[in-house]
Image (cartoon, rainbow over all chains, first blue to last red; front, side, top):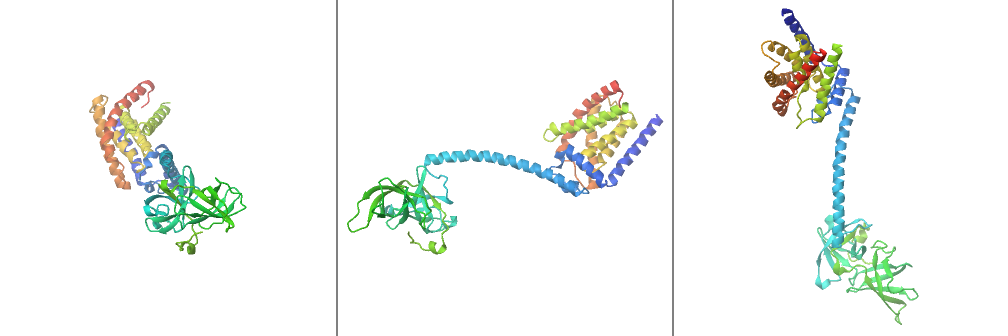
Length: 285
Length: 159
């Protein structure tokens, strides 16, 4: 019994001293690295949220880099999962947005850089002349930016920005008697000037007499025009008038591509025109 | 042969603990099978072997952990010695004794390790949740581990 007790005491002293030595003497770099590698491999959850720098002291830099890469990899995987979920939510929202847009006949994706704006005020006395939109200089709108409206699935020229305020802007409609645009008659590309009349129709001038122009011909903004981007639908020829005896040109009535009476939302195309041009408030083509 | 079996049992205990903590944690809690094995080995083995089991199981826990190295080895060594003394006065084979020993020694070992960790590394390794819950999980694990070790001892002569 006494021998057994002695053996227990010796064992206790031996293992306790060994433990204390392990506690007292700092582990060599190699042993410490091995321990960290083992504990990290077997028990990585221990390292999450822990004072990481404290535990990986006295460890070769390349091993630290390996651990940090693993941590970063785990964090990035978690981030990728989050983003995938976010993407799925976004695609659902985009589909919903498109459906609502179709229902409300508003915003579409257009091949120009710009922003959508809502029509906030129309003046009865100037119904075909101008209206206000809820975007201004705070949103990057500038004078003479092109304003497009949607007619069904197609965009058409509605006018251009005439006055800009911080929170809203005034749009000069193409149907305004003071507005005009250089147009190309499709498909030949013959250029002519389309002007507003202050009514729901436009007037086309300066069409050469010999031009093969027919009712229903489509007009788009001409590449040579300064204010408007080329290729924007302007309208269709509604009625041709014979040449007056004292003129060398024929004229025509044009139905606008955009019905200003139904516009709720417009797309303002950023033109980034030269400063000296944008300062000309009344500039017209 | 016996030594080889003991080595296998040692590794199996460590692997079980590692697997359990990786897959079966409940609110971040798991029974400490290393502690349970150290206690069961101390009850079943002779004094030297019990203390050696305590030391080496503690060393395994130290390898897994991130705090002071050698802390658990010292803690389980002292615990095995204490169990060796106590079992001469109490029947540690009974379920009640094992439950009481599991709960009380869990807390004592945690507090002792906490003290070592604070003294040697200024790290506070034990959270309150762990301190309050783990002793009771250990109390559930100790009788099971004891029965497994007891069965192995009778069948193979380990411990």
